[in-house]
Amino acid sequence: MTVIDISPSVMQFLLAFIVVAPLLGALAALLPAPPGLRGRNPDQAVLRHGVTVTGAVLVAAIVLAAGFDHDQPATMQATTDISWIPALDVRIHLGIDGISLPLLVLTALLTFLCALYSYFKLPAGPSPKAFVALVLVLESGTLATFAVLDLLLFFLAFEMVLIPMYFLIARWGGDQRQAAAWKFILYTLLGSVVMLLGLLLIGLKSGTFDMVALATDNGRGLTTSVQVIAVLAIGLGLAVKTPMWPLHSWLPDAHTAAPTVGSVLLAGVLLKMGTYGFVRILLPVAPDGMRTFAPYLAAFAVVGIVYGSLACLALARTGAKGDLKRLIAYSSVGHMGFVLLGIATMTPTGVNGALFANIAHGLITGLLFFLVGAVKDRYGTADLDTLAGATGAALYGRAPRLGALLAFAAVASLGLPGLAGFWGEMLTLFGAYSPAEGLSRPAFRTFMAIGAFGTLLTAAYMLIVVRRVCMGEHAPHSRLSPDEQPQQAPRAADGPQPAGTAGSPSSGTAGPRTATTPQLADIHPYEAAAWTPLVALTVVAGLWPAVLLGLTDPAVQQLLAGGKS
Image 1 (cartoon, helix red, strand yellow):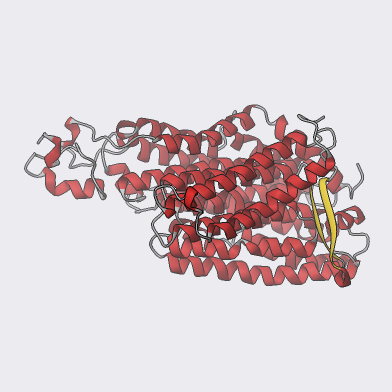
Image 2 (image 1 turned 120 degrees about the horizontal axis):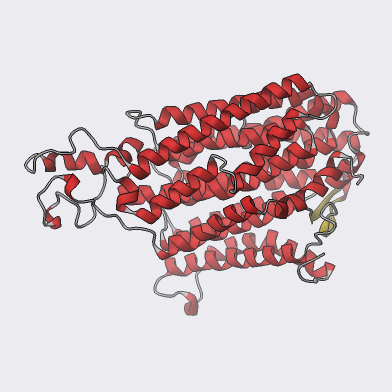
């Protein structure tokens, strides 16, 4: 069943266009704009170009999804297979199935929303031309990662995103951006070198780099020792990108320093490349090696769940001077731990839960980073103590719609039933209750219990964030006399004050802060346009999970069965 009937040749063209168009758009962004398209200034023209290219890619991805045969989601569709390097049997092999299609659409959507947001709120930094070009190269590399079906092409696409993200952090980031960018590039490059050795080992020992042929063979052409070495090498590189504890330390620094759109793309898209590699390559190609390391992967996953939650609780406590962006970054470590736990179970239930959690995390955490960026723009800081102490009413009193949306994203992130964050975590825990044959059931049930405890910790720190940032805290000195009030105003706001703030000369009042609630700019139209799709999809995925699970489940079943339905 397809939503619209599209010929196979058009489907092939659409997939090739989705992968190549952002790269061509990046090259065009660096060229001078034609006279008729310059608008008021060249900067506006190049930003409009970014919105146009990413919008065209998103439309193509939606049409591709509409033409996808939902009755056969386990079959590779829109395939292109062209010989590239005959000596190594490396082919330009593209295709999508029920596993890769949702990630492809998610990437196209988030990149378009980031381009739209940047058109109105460009981060401070060098040339807008370079910014747009880097975002488009990043999109092309990410889309290619989810579309290619050759191991060496997968590696090239996997590495293609590193340089753009490095420069987005290093040139458009905030405080400590150089150190964070270097940490990001060094961690991921070192992991990638080891991963390349594992990919070459599989290709040379099996005689092919074709991922479909390798998945169908299901490891029968590789000895157990080769599989173990390959899983160790490839898994290390994928674990860095995911990131898995204890290889996660680059992530909080990168998120804290990155511009808003950089954080959205890093959390919403780049982290998914690592977990996708586990599902697409290691599970079907080296099942014996995965079975050897699955208990260790699950153990690291649940440690990451608890560690990420405890780190968030430490940042959220009063007086810790915790950064809200850093807190959301640590929450990603915990959420991606659930994804890794689901993969480690090697069961259809667990892997489907991992894929669902991937998409949910991209939607919810992408929205959270958008919102935190908006809060930081308004307050001039993301420090939790400052945000909570700025006024007793905090966001609910100063920007009620923004506060309500932040609370919605927080409860979605903690896994509230009826929203997207619930189903992935629940399915991964169900998968851990009954892992694949050959895995220790008592050990995985222990991991399940630890993961379930992690959901309680997640709820704790998210509710603390909502209470402090949205409801605020009355400081002990909140009823100072009018003469003393101006000395306290800088501490209360720690950022630029809007006109009309109580206690300021323009407010026309000299009373204490509790007399009035200073107002901030609430949600702007361009922010509503960028955030509404994420809110809507979070609700839709939570209420109708079968839409996504109907795509992934047949493909996962076939993948785990070695290409057999």
